[in-house]
Structure formats: structure tokens, C-alpha cells
Image (cartoon, rainbow, N blue to C red; front, top):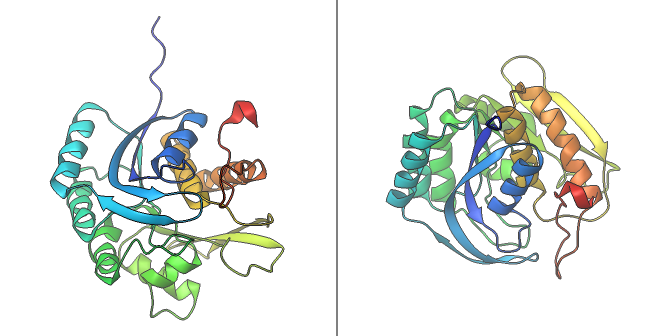
Length: 264
């Protein structure tokens, strides 16, 4: 008797050679959560656990061909976008996503590395706001990324409102980079259907490389398993916290979430 076909999720993003973030983080997360990951590379990076030093995006026509080929063959239940790579790639994705209107799309806006490397300039961020957000189910910025996406907003609530007005269905603002002296971290979900929903957890000491990728990939994986949005977020926050409790120091930089459960 053949084995049942596992749920599939599509991950679109950059390659981090350290394995802390990017598509490696996505693939590890999905695999541990019972999802078969398929992936498309938007950019190659030269980086380690300390910083990013160079990025080379793929040609937009290559990404378009790869996207059309994989989706003509395999039907994912959810999709995650991470590092995009260039304004032209943002435009390409904005043209491709409307062809799959029932597919939940999670967007982790990778705009600036913690080490200081700038992934996205103003033109790129404008392209994301103008063309991509209307095709996104959930965007998961931290506070720094939220400020870049909504620079005129005075508060996180106003910033989230501006992204919702651009067409995204939900905004999850993660709080690990906010109020570093607080004993807690929070994640706040903004939608058009009621007041914000806040989850809180104990702040762990230090900082990590790949937390945002891990969380967004976990949400994408739970959506692929059929979870509604809020339960998917709740389960993903819990799972991500567990990976941080067992974070591994692999190099000179920050520890990375440890996503391989047999060794946890």
C-alpha cells in the first residue's frame, strides 16, 4: 500500500550558507513539522552567523520559469516568501501570485540583516508596498522591518494599519527586537476583524540568527497542515520558542535555532 502523500509547502527565498536562516531554515522547519518542502531560490548570499557580505539575485525570468514549472507539477497548500533579492523579483512575484488565489501566502520581509547589511533599498521597499502586499495573507515583520515598511506611522498599530490598507490580510508584528530590557517578548496580530491579538512569552537571553525565518516557516507549515491562521501562529510561536531553548552556537556569531528534533 503506498504511503499517504504529505502536505506540501513552497518556500521562496535566499540561500544562507550558515544554515541559520533562509531556505535551509525553511526546509528544516517544514520537514520537522511533517511538511514536504519545495523551494525556489531568489538570491545567493555570502554570509555567516555574524553578517551578510554580498548578495546576488537570480534573474527574474529564471524565477518565473521555475515558479511556473514547479506549480504545474506539484500543488502546495501554502507558500512562504522570504528574501526577495531585487525590485524586479518583487514585481515578478506580484505577477505570479494572482494565478493562485486560494493559496495562503506568508511573507517574512527580510530587509536588513542584524549585522547591518542592507538587503532592500527604498525602491525595493516601495515595490513591495505597491505591488506585493495585496497578494499576501500574512506579513511577519519585526519592529525594525515594520518601521521600514511604514516610515510615516507613529505607532505599530498605525504601521500595521497602513499595511492592511495596502491589501495584506493580516500583520504579525514580532517583538524580539523591541524593548530589549523587558522580561517578555510579544507578537501582535493585526487584522480587519477585531482588536489585536497578543501572545507573550519569556524573553530568552541573547539574540539569535534565523528566528524570523523559523517562525514564518513554521506558520507556513501549520497552514499547510490545515490550521486556521490564529492557531497556526500560536503553534508556530510555541515551536519556535522550543528551537531557541536548544539553539546551537555554530560559529563566531549568534546562535541559530536548533530545528532537528531527534537531537533536542
